[in-house]
Image (tube, rainbow, N blue to C red; front, side):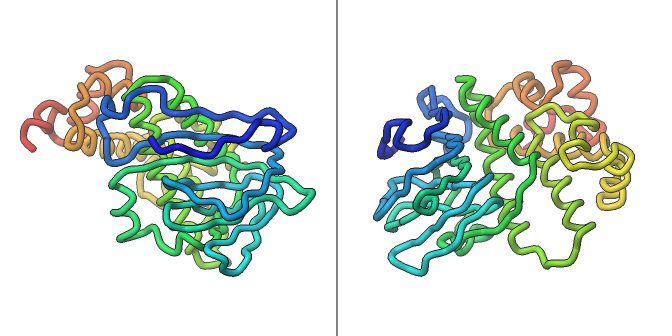
Length: 287
């Protein structure tokens, strides 16, 4: 893990802050190509950073308030609620709330070879503020990642890294959406929420409440945009994630099932065979 400049809590914010770091040796993780080293929630942040340098990547998501961001003495960019920006090695960065102001910040610090793959495809213009909007569902996903990281379980920590990748991918895609597509945008938000919550319990009523809609509307929206009923769609996504874990990790099938919310391994195996054509162990062995 790479070091990070530390400040007293009282220097960062007058409110209580939450910081969770990696509690196990990274060699115990099954996905070495992407590791979350630290997460933080800094409500009411007042601290500004000037001429700051970083030894690892991090994203900062602003859930309230406003401020500024500048990379390598470039133009000063406005930051407000619903904005995302990055800090990264090799650059000098100024950022923070406006003088006398504050913002509500979530950050995730991460490293690994996976980042270079992102930079070669979908992670572009990392020195520009992204306007991705605000959804309570994203705060719920970040809170779930906190719990996974502080669990101390390698499987759960790997799950947090996978959620990080999905969340960033979806945010970057959302930042490129054309304007004036309200229904499509709402559907994208719902589908992104589902895709980044595969390691968390998915309850239709809670999901609908997060997006301020009736459960019947939620079910109709998912069916219209995917062609599948809500729970069928969720099962399909989880089975695709299972395939990826079976091929890219040595995790026991029982651990994969538990991580994805299937405590009954027999039911999980039947479900996987229904969607994948083979039992999990046969799928792994064949590949």
